[in-house]
Length: 366
Image 1 (cartoon, rainbow, N blue to C red):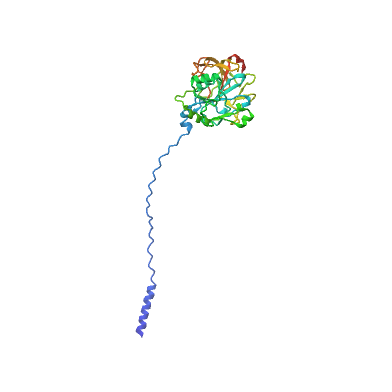
Image 2 (cartoon, rainbow, N blue to C red):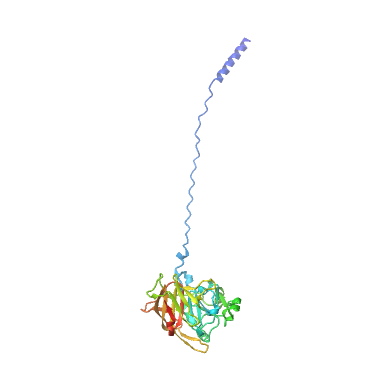
């Protein structure tokens, strides 16, 4: 018994001594080494996409043959179109006359004038009117600008010359094979103004007619109608703030200079474009003196527009005397200063008046 108790004591002492031992130290923390991440190879920079320059910087490398303003080579080759426009007081306002880049004003019979509007790109023009009949001298406009002539009938003198020359024209009266809808009568104007003052067409319809008739709508070798200054220039001349042209007791258009343009009045009122409601205006006014005479009982005129003559150029608030010349009916118009140098216009729209040389005092410039 004593032996058993002794063994228990020894075992108890051993267990106590074992439990008094300090705990084994924990193993020191080991550094956690982050995995080495190889940097991704940089993506190759995309090749720069070429930035298209603005159209004005790249494609406007040509000049309009009517205005001298910058345009694309394709635009410079578009064949102009000359439309005969009614200028009777009852027919105003005309539609899209303000879109014409050159407007010619001619004496017609009875003291009335008629306009021929010349458009650089007829396909961009909306409705046009009122379209009226042609006179033989309107073909001079077409030849000078290499333009297709658009009209509704004409005098016997016109047809004699037209048939002889075989010139490209669109005639509402005689051409029965025109595409349907090339011309139409505005019903409201037919009622309020009269049948003869209601005929209209459009750039889109005319372009379809040109294709149907097989007319060329591009010029192979476009050449400018006029010479233009590089920058706006006032010639060394007399002051020209207002210009009045007394065609007859019936019509005396007046032009007033403002902000670089000459704004037109007709019949004592602003000459309005019905399409925009704005007064038509021009950078240049050209007055050409010609021989004119009455040739029949209908008071039709013979106007000599070949050879040589004098004139007046008005631009940038100044007026100067000029001379004009044309070798023949198919020749271009040449404008020269009195010293023999080429007369230059400022870039923009031009109004040309063909005036009777016997009545030069009918021009007032102040």
